[in-house]
Amino acid sequence: MNERILIRNTTIVNEGISSIKDVLLSDGFIQKIGRIKIEPNYKVIDGTGKHLFPGIIDGQVHFRDPGLTHKGDLYTESKAAIAGGVTSFIDMPNTVPNILTVKSLKEKYEIASKKSLANYSFFLGVNGDNIDEVIKMDTSQFIGVSDDGLYFTKKGNLLADSPEKMEKLFANCTSIIAIHSEKEEIVEANEQAFREKYGDDIPAKFHPIIRSSVGCYEATKRAIEIAKKHNARLHILHLTTEAETHLFRNDILLKDKKITTEVSVHHLWFTDKDYERLGVLIKWNPAIKTKQDKEGLLKALLDDRIDIITTDHAPHTLEEKEQSYFQSMSGAPMVQHSLNCMLEFYKKGLISLEKIVEKMCHNPAILYKMTNRGFIREGYYADLTLVDLNSKWTVAKDNLLYKCGWSPLEGTIFQTEIKQTFVNGNLVYDNGLWNEDKKGMAIDFTTENVTH
Image 1 (cartoon, rainbow, N blue to C red):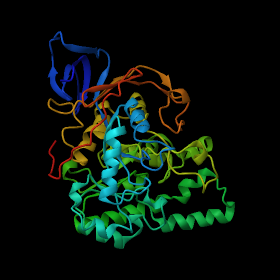
Image 2: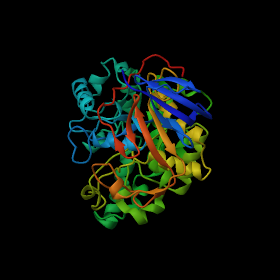
Image 3: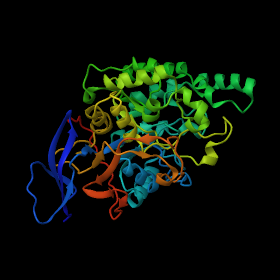
């Protein structure tokens, strides 16, 4: 039997309400919530003055395992995630090999069972090479299928750029289809125009012009139209433009939506003005865009057109990033700091704690139909994070846990600090100390409609 842990007198933020209560954890689950008498065998944690959130569920990460483990792996990046209050993640298929078969997917789950400290799930990759095999499968066995990142392997792998492939997939796939939404033909035309002017060394500030708002909007609009035609379950990854937000609905419950979307933290945090300071370090695809786009994304998050918050955590070595425009790899590490970033917006009065929890904990569990996760409820897995909302610290190389060893947030002063993180009832992270005795679990999900 696991030890019983009692978190006393903490402010629970859950399901739209913040209230001071005790929480008893036992055998991996939340056993009781309320006013709880201390028993001799309880390990007691004083939560006075601190806030207890459900563990963050990050619906889009690139942890690089297998095959790209010089950048990050399922151990290092899950550890960084837990230090940031993230207890569960869904990893993308652009590893080496690309996860395009059930066999490679099972092998990835096996690697995670030995290495990941957080709970895990994985998208099956779908592209032009395997789409015919995928549509023959019972895709309900997968948490989702995705093309994200596969365009790095070769041109023509973006579903959003191929109406014919989308028609075929959307007509035959029963799982969530999560896509990277940019029109490759528009990007390539812009690349050529800037290459003619600047050669290969294009200034980073032109990245959002090359990977333009028009390229994003047109791709997303077309994908939604095709998904509606086939009543498919479409999820648009990492939305970046204010214009795109108007393509999504907020007049129905998330559990009933067929078309959903997300925003990644960096698209809420940075704007195109930051390229002058950070250059290719903040080169992401799709690109960080204007202040107007950033504000429009936050507005859509608050009014529920955008459903969840992710990180698109994508570590590269500094050597891979600090190259000329075309050679610099796209993506950057964010998973250790996503909750802190959102809590800075709370400190500025831009979002409530309850809305942060909704978008980072509740909604990912609902969207991906996860079993007994994402909420602080009796009988649910004890995935929890205890946060001090009044503890300043500075992001620096010596407190980064990413294998790549750098962050675009270095030098940022956060006013909030993650103190403790519980994964399946295990206190894995405790004020800088680690208990790595137990690994995370594969995330259970249902193919039935979930009414959380």
